[in-house]
Image (cartoon, rainbow, N blue to C red; front, side, top):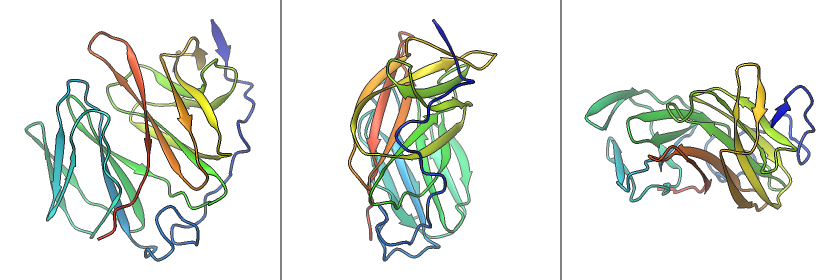
Length: 221
């Protein structure tokens, strides 16, 4: 079954622009300097292997696939991130939030959008490199309402929504921007106000997909 993207009902009262990082009520703490750099590591592997990445004196570790670290503040510097025998240069910018996705083959660096609305939840959709040969869409598991209608490989999008309990799905998008149903994978999300939830699809060795959900947190020094 094919569902046209051209007409999409916005889900859960979308927030247009998110406020600044240091504003009161932020997930990241009102006392955090607005120029802060935050980084976290998410294990998106499918083979049961734990992952670890070092940045100077900070070592981020996610023990099993599906694990995620809190966001950690770091200082501006030039880092060489070692993963899977390769090195990736990482030059974090001030007032920026990063997620490192540690997959089976590579380490991907994604830039996140801050969430500081205490009355809403944030939903984040990721399309990690190598997971799908097509763009991906995210929405209700039955495909009736789309949150993110089209996310290209290697990109992500975020949205402020009302907090509720809902089953969400990830969908393939074909070459003419049509969303394909049924979903590749689905997951239930129990949202809370002021919290941020990442939706990360992974492709398993048998060719099926899994949709993993991560609730963001902050680790201060």
